[in-house]
Every structure is written in C-alpha cells, then in structure tokens.
Image: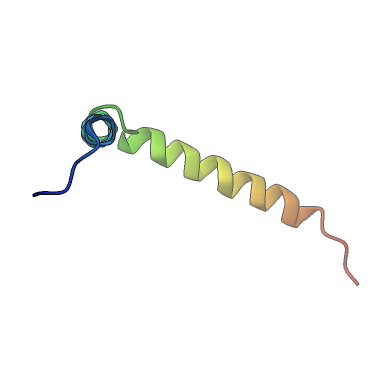
Length: 58
C-alpha cells in the first residue's frame, strides 16, 4: 500500500507557491523606477554629509 497523504498540507503548499509566484510578478511590475532609486540615494548622501558636518573633532 502507498503511504497516505495529507490533502490539507498539499493544498496549503500549493497556495504558498502560487502566492510566491504572484509576489515575484508584482515585484517586477511595481518596483522602483530608476528616478526613484536615484532620489533615494541622493537623500542618503545628503543625510550622511549633514551628519559628517556635525562630527566633533577629537
């Protein structure tokens, strides 16, 4: 005889895989554009420069 399988486990695993596939598709469709990424990098550089300007000399 073959071993019994848990149908609930199979159903949930299938749902997880479908959810992961959909998440990957949405990530490619709704990711950040080049301009948005550049704006974020500029903000980080500005914040670092601001903090570096306030460092104390020891």
